[in-house]
Image: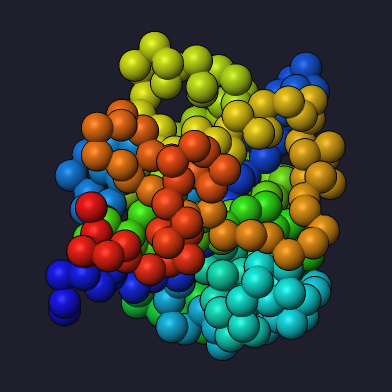
Length: 265
């Protein structure tokens, strides 16, 4: 690959999994990733991961792929991948399944989760075998972030909100995280400022945005209704943090997704 050509971002999906604490105040589920991981190692993140080729073949209840494509500003096939990856990754990493259908006992569901996570069976095959159908209507689109062009590993990530369905609990039973727990958004930001956790810029920006909401239902209902504009941060030599569109000095050439003259900085 030419040194001036940025790596093509891989499609990915991330879910802001929401609930209220016993006092009715908003909480969001965050995981601290294993330090040695190739991407975001040691960072505290929302659950999520890359789109798998098999994700696009899974049918669901709720808005059609064309509706999601319009909201996310992408084609129908890519939108289907974003939605199904969001549901699958939430199941793999948190044990929360955004689906309806037959009643499944806990042991069977745990085995199905492990099969999907270990790629022994596709997510679609597992759902069919259990008599379950994805509930895409339980997701709301929230944002879309693209990894800066200078990074060797890049993702084009759709962010969604989802409230934990009644009777389900999120857990930390994933090999990709060393811990996972519920946070008040403001508390997570304070822990970051105190140096207790690491937050990437998208996570930090979204936590800042959602910290103003009182509860999960209010936040979930506040999802954008128009086309979501992708956000592409830019690294600038000498600055401690990335720049975002609208920041002074943000390179408009980078905003278009193309490397500036002379190659990535």
